[in-house]
Amino acid sequence: MLLANGHAADVLTSWQIEIDIDEQTITVSKRNRILIGVDKETLAFRFIRRIKIDEHLIGADITIQAVGDKLTAYCLDKSACQRIKEILMEYNATSKTKHNIFS
Image (cartoon, rainbow, N blue to C red; front, side):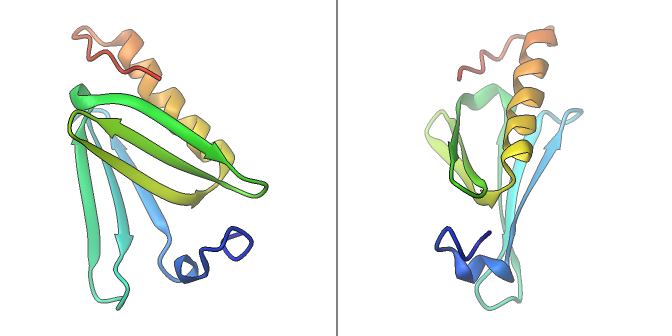
């Protein structure tokens, strides 16, 4: 899947997305190029403004745009990207404090 999309280097260092409903954060992480550490970026739900899913023949990329920043993860399963979007949109719909996640 990664080779077909031109992301051969991501075979060893795949993207991980962690959604923490209790802390209201989303974290995207990836092992760095030299395989020693892990690079992480975290956003609070209240800053999310847009969720973009770019589907390919095999797999999909997801970009979560926020006020002043964005998180991107490449070469994920299409169903995983849709599930992430559903989780965030469902949280926004049922949250007592509206964060206005748009898509």
